[in-house]
Length: 409
Image 1 (cartoon, rainbow, N blue to C red):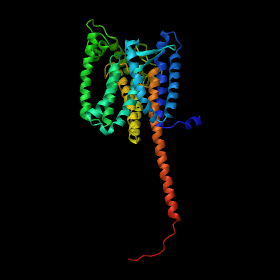
Image 2 (cartoon, rainbow, N blue to C red; image 1 turned 120 degrees about the vertical axis):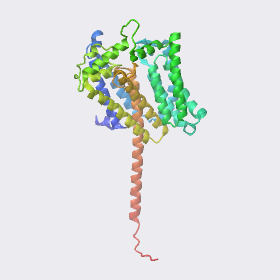
Image 3 (cartoon, one colour; image 1 turned 120 degrees about the horizontal axis):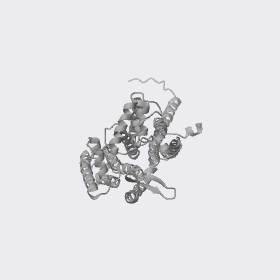
């Protein structure tokens, strides 16, 4: 065990956060999937064991990735970005239809589905960090600096939006923040935000008119959030989800009902993914819910410190870009559970039950820890160099013979 710990480098706080989120998620998934296991005629611990296997695989990905020099990710970012485009196109045209959305593709032979937007999201931030680091000298120029870094964002977000608008909006918002950190002209960012708002309305209108994408679902979720009733007076599924989530939060109180004592897990359609934060509050109370928020904010703060310490632009942009998108996704998931925003379908990173989402999230954590490991090693090398130089200086001073002559003006 000690031999393994010797090979674990990087920010120990981030390692601890990953471990705590994983353990917390494992407990909540075990509790939230009891009804699902019963309906599918599975053992009560079936989904917990499955989640544990995914988390163990994710831990292996984090460990292997953090041992890689992060500079190599700059070289493969171009290939990953180019691969993500045909993957998204294939998903849009032939993707598996799960929960009324074509967001997954099925891998032949092994018949495992994964969400291509997770891969595309990671590829985009790696490629964007590379471009921002290269274009720093001309980043203020609209044609030479802004357009080259904008095009990849528009392509990926445009391919994701028809089937997964919430993820596209999350990517767009995170990229705007990354543009601001990367010294892009604020006027250009404001222009992009304005064009993005107009583009959302156009996309929703075209989706409803030509019956492609999920325009009807988006409008229905907004209507539910605004409290509009259906013509028949019946409650919609999203409104039902929100109400059950509110009941779960109200039942939790300050300290919660205790682990495994959730009642609303029997009524919420997706208590183990979209609304898992409501189950957390019901079982662990506001104290448990606040703890989860604190862990994500602590992770963001550690990544901001890493951004300030990293001497190279690529590593700094990559660390802050990946951390912001993970924390934003977590905040949106929790905001849905407490009815601050419409239902989005985003999962809670490292906590919600999942497969490909956890693995790609683990890859993001591994890249951030790789950057942290490099910065720590570089600072350690510089500190050792300073100590050696200081020793040499002291030795040279000691070897000099004292000068006893008295000089007079």
